[in-house]
Length: 447
Ligand code: PLP
Image (cartoon, rainbow, N blue to C red; front, side):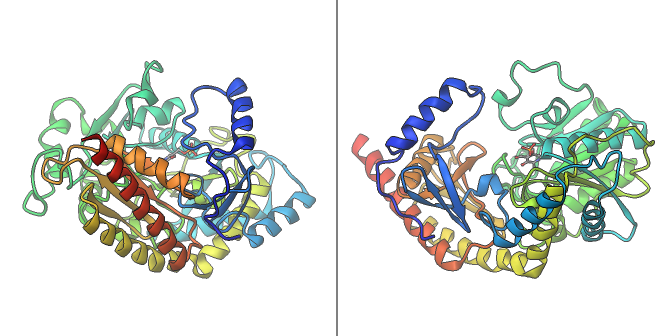
């Protein structure tokens, strides 16, 4: 299916009618970034009800890892659906569940054996991790980062500090959560420069927060996104995660890597922590793990996942159809898609850097593999976030047939399916170039 192919103004008449019906019944809390009413998808392309085809560089928020309806995944899902749909693995057994868990346990770094708990969503995986680290350490407190996104259920939300609207009105949240600045060198929270800063955003915690209001002996774990996702696709400095690991070890705190967005091959390695040479105690996986079917995994060192029988589980967690999709997804990732993410990601990165040379709105290009982003600023010196401009570029790109999402305050992210080709990236960059030019012309017209 070739994309983009735009036949109507978007949204077209059928999409507008469908959206009107949806708006009358859907919870108003949904963001609804684009008026896209999908009828089918294939690879990196999505077709809407009006026959418009879009190049999908959002992939259901980094979830459709193997592309839309990959035949291998669809076959695995169909086969499993004919066998049985549900058995409840909290109470019974499913060989596909076991096989998947063995594979996930193997791909987590570190020599110690692992145990796996399967859930339905990223947030549920994070909830599992919160309960696990508290139960194991018998400590109540948690450390998380400014800009973090860990999900929207109340425990996960307590760790989330991405946008005020996500938290407003939902308190009181979990007590004992301390947020500390993230290692964002483009906007250093301490106004320092790497590497002469000595990674003060980590090392300084020893003398500040941990010596003032958050006694480290009460902290169960530090929750880290190895690359911040919703917070703006922020890649911390190379030794950041290692220094955090050391800080955790010095105080008996566990390190939880939330790889819901960065994991499953997205960064060109199976897990983002592999780029940083760090071994977490707990890893949370979700999104791309089952190519779009609901599934998450909390993978922990076996000596950490030592909680009592009956202490945690869920009816649908590790549903057989999702497990079948995840096993097929892993086959594809291990069969070449992780390498494709590294290879095509480097190509996309080069293209984005080329765009940055032509469009001064682009303040920084960053990312790893197919987790790439551009941060838009009004001025490269002052770095004032260009939020309206980022929204306008994304809207313009959509009208031209390219689906993109923003993140952070003024960042546009690129997280296409891992099957994406160089040619598709080139086409996306062409559309984006046109979108920047159009937005630039409109801005000039206004001044
Ligand atoms: N953790 C991270 C890093 C995420 O990016 C997300 C979702 O964007 C979540 C957790 C929550 O996942 P879900 O929306 O599946 O609950």
